[in-house]
Length: 520
Image 1: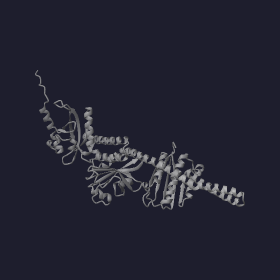
Image 2 (image 1 turned 45 degrees about the vertical axis):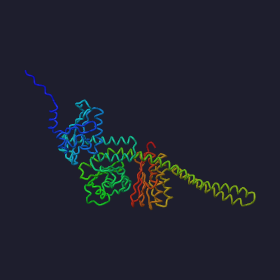
Image 3 (image 1 turned 60 degrees about the vertical axis):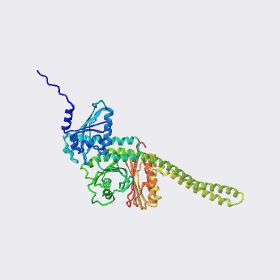
């Protein structure tokens, strides 16, 4: 029986195989320089091998927003020697993006030098049109690979943001990173993180643009009107993702700026922190965005909300500590001034009057009048000391509870105030916290709001006290312009609660708070 000759896989066969296969075959060195680029790569990308050989893959076929993730994969492969199948995008010569699923393996070079990375890829874009309905992909392996690739990209993005949060980076860096990762994951021109300010405005707290931000019409720190004709305004009112299809004929400042930056469409999605609508992420594109963009951006915002909350909480805590120290110093100075200018002066005057009366007792009947004046001074001093004591901790609160104490506050104000409070007693520190929040809020209303009426309403829901303070004043209260509103929030947060102020101009102010009773 004759023996079949051994078939030897030589260089010529390997060359023919790589050039005739429909798969993309590319060989890279450790610095990601392209050493081999087969015919399939040329057909898919439009680059010739002469254009790319010797060049860095990141300068040709790797999109800018995916360059960092690509570098991480390359470093991982060379540091571990393990393959790392990926799904990502390749750029074509004319600027289009192709979704590529590629496998890879390190191979020793023929001359014994450093290893080479051999990659083989499949163009998923040909069978996975952008924006196609997900149900059309059921049972399609390539579509599933594409979805896995998107998920992997999102996970890498989240890991980068989480690393920043763990390193206690500033909120500005975290918000900017969230913007950058959103633009990367959603493959868009630009992205921004907006923080709602409690009225009909939002502030840009994070910003990223592929073309740079030097001439960007949307600057970091800019405060924008969140009107109904804007994407972020629709998110503010509905709490759901929103789309602006075309800014070509749309009126308004935001639309003008979008046209200035050559953005045609946008999608915005909410960022919800602890059940509260904190802000939104908005993305913009020069082309119409795919139909699944709202769902993808909404899902990504859900994932980054914890990072946003952590960064915001750390900034709020730092600012709160500074304000509490400052407020404590100011209160001590105020107490010292009140004692010095009021009760102390009266007591000094009383002491002098009594000494004068003692001398007058020796000389005539004028002593009786002097003692009467001394008694009157003593009465005034005692009344001022009682007022000071009420400022430190009101006796009515200790003896009778929140309802009577706040009713007493309401009677001393120049506006009509309705108070509804629970009859049952609450933990002492919770009662004190609520008392001073309501006192400060009503004092602000009387001094600044130009209101005629106000209302305080409290309800118990399980182990949580909810209360709301409303007025019919001019609104427009801005936390950034004074420490009053921030002081209210600090008091609530000091006992583990939350407090928010909504104050649209011309529509009055609403202060809403929740304080936990458990552990109080």
